[in-house]
Image (cartoon, rainbow, N blue to C red; front, side):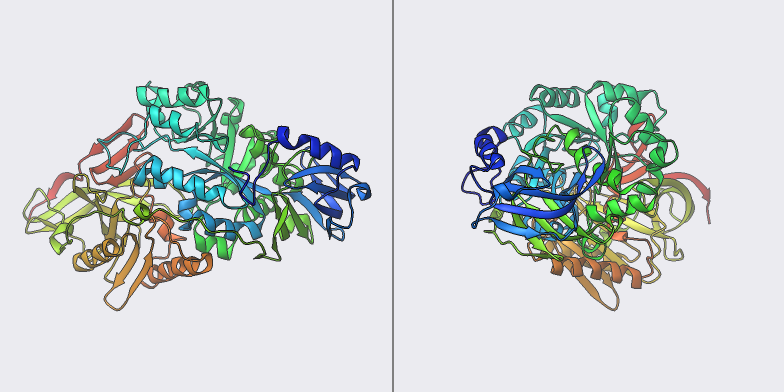
Length: 612
């Protein structure tokens, strides 16, 4: 970050003399917020009648009387008794999952009280490598957010034999990215947990490079919390994990010295269960964090961001101040930046939100970021020069040919009859899937699913222009009731072109349309077509937040009309290629099983049941 940036946050060392001079009154505050009920997340108290003096981007003084810091040039905000809390922090978030650029993400979440976060850009990194991560970092630096980036640890998520990605990141690339600045905070979620446990050289060296740089490594461990290998994973220095779905997951991680991240994304609803580690078992909350992980633009518009998660935690019985701690100071302490963000204390960055009504409502009416008022009453008031996204980010979908109906025909090992096959069962509101054995009809060597309203096809095409491969599988539980298909270039984490449907002609049409618009989502039925262009890396839209949210919602409505009633179904379907989450997934290499014994490609078909 450079001094020319209007949101520049000087280091405490650089601006400390001016802060001290302002605190004693020799210099004057640039902004003063008076008459607040201060939410002190350090002491766990609410302090009435407090005021805050700010000099440029940092807090100089907090107390009952700050009149000595104010003159005629000081901008004074009279809070009239409203709550003042630290700006909210998202401790684990993939901006790409909002379908927004960093600029539009900032415009969406700042009015909601999010002033910073820790962002794992492993979606764009799987498409563009370090070039993608770099442009995300530079764009984040142009916004008011206190944005800290993590270098993707798993590009690919396991190894190339299980999937094809658009790039590769190894120990050397990790070391390079961590030198880009203090806002490169660490290593993103290490999804290849078997590789860590069993000593995979690449994974061990990536973590070593992170620790040598004095940075932080994040986790992703999906074996059971009572598995003997969780302490092995923790021994690597990975000190935070968001794959907590039960209270036991939280308890075991905290007992091992890790931070437990409790997730409430668009389709992953884990807080109600995980928070019981505190509300039922009384576990200390110092190492508990509230995060979003993946949250769509329509969820941001309709529900909110971290403000929504904090409100939800309070509704589960968490004390309001405690819930705020889980989204502010706990998060800052986890990443070693609590001197800068996470509290309203002298010397900290002036990231402050004012809240109306009861604290448990989390009703944000003003957001101050880097010492400037940036949003009021749910609307952005600040503007800044937009970041120019590099042209190469708009040219990342390389299929190289037109898809045809035959690309979606599943060839069976028998000519006619029925045969056992493995199906991927979608689980609503969860990241995991279930492996189910089912019986499918075969006609003239091809699987025929037309008689089933619970099964449909899934196809994954390598879209990075590397090998042109593709694979086919069977889905259970999507619920399409009419001929329909959805194609998308958002398919975590390899982000190959994924097409799901029950009609081969419509599947080819949807896939070709997604390719032609250089990425996005296309929903096709015999009656209508709904498109959601995402040309930035095939993942994000450069359009304004509100427009993107409505386009995302249109896809959801089109799926609903086709019979799919799953909550936030697009987000759920987009994870069906993520080959590190149990139990079964599909990549461009084939059907992948994830079990306690490891990760492997398995055949689609089982035994022949009956011949006709």
